[in-house]
Length: 261
Image (tube, rainbow, N blue to C red; front, side):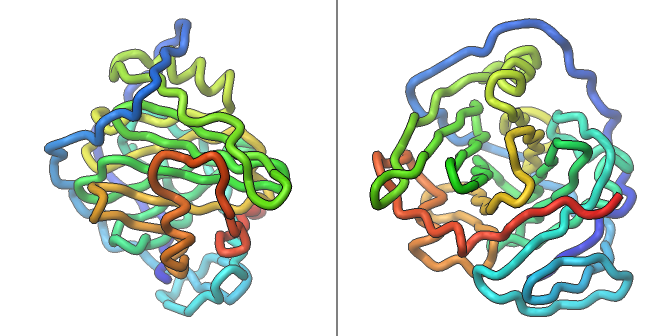
């Protein structure tokens, strides 16, 4: 697994998020955005050292294997992020980053009770960030629209509390995303906005000590995953329309904890 520190990046100026009202909704799954532009690679970053149980920053580039299902990621503190699909200049400085199985980069950072997540890749069509605690598993999806699905503990497996409820299809309707943040505790940019291949998340649902996994999707045959060590069955659990029950094994995911200020 490769883990790198976020360095200074020069890109387009940050956009402003407008305040207004009303989350839209939909019932069918949105299409994956088509014809994305190529994502420009960032300057070569430094790496961080990884032990089998914890991720900590260092200045020397080191690649160390991580034991499956035993990882604890110490998420570094940072500053608030504008959720516009653009990795603004110095905006993600200090974030920890991981290589996903498809070569995309996953960035993690937090401020206060808010977790910031970004996925940076080429030809990204959709992203699922999955957060698991003892009492719920939330699937946070961004593609042509935003939608979340929720699982709760059942007798033997996880039971679907609700499937995806779509909103925020309009690239110019920032107010709908802010309403989603207020109502469900998260928001993201959709795939048609910002820099092609970049999806940013703001997550305010309880995440400290939660388990986390991520999938990136270009097509049914072209997907990426984090953690890298997930089995084929564990990867399948991060894709597709959510069934009524699922046998999630969150021990195969990484536990995320806030690092020191």
